[in-house]
Image 1 (tube, rainbow, N blue to C red):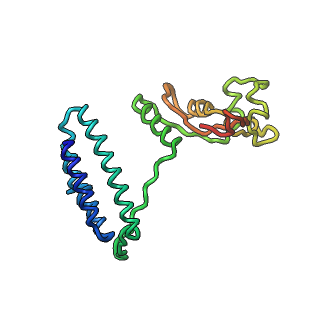
Image 2 (cartoon, rainbow, N blue to C red):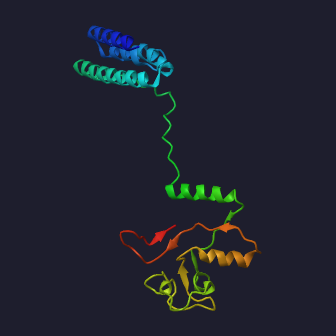
Image 3 (cartoon, rainbow, N blue to C red):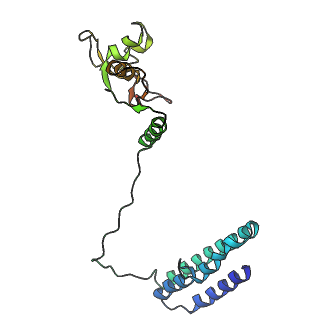
Amino acid sequence: MKEQIEQLKAQFIADLDRMQNADQLVQLEIDYFGRKAGKFTAVLRGLKDMPIEQRKIIGQLANEVKVEAARALAQAQSKMGGPATTTLDVTLPGAALPEGHLHLVTQAIEEIDAIFSRLGFVRRRYPEVDWDWYAFESLNMPKDHPARDEWETFFIDEAPVGKKGQRVLTPHTSNGQVREMERTQLPIRMINIAKCYRRQSDVSHVPMFH
């Protein structure tokens, strides 16, 4: 196969010297490197049948030839005034825009959800603004707990409102555990993946996280 590649390389260079315009250069590239019927492509299809060590050597040689050919084509196109011009058919359908993907956080949540659902868990979602009762009091966190300090938690209300205290931006998702126990019976298999808010902002912390 090495000899075949070398022969094709020499033949390509000879054919390249005979090209007279940019359109011929385009056709030459297709004839040698086209995906379906290119001469060079046809030879490389035999790589899969070769031993791994030989495949590496031939593959490296093939890549070097492709790079040299691309460089030679670019130089020839430059001398002839650039790549061949193509006509625009306005009746053709528009090219489809590239599709994006899920946000990495959303993707991670879906993967975690899929794993736990196979174990019999269900995902629950509860308010991101909740009462002090659900965020702290019902979890047996004393009044003087550091997390209940205004420098740690975002308080919505300046003073307690009713029996459930002040409203806060949820500092953790444990409020969902209490709410789940209120609405259903044991045993409970649930996960609550949600946004949490803490008044921390430095190199390793942001005010909102999951």
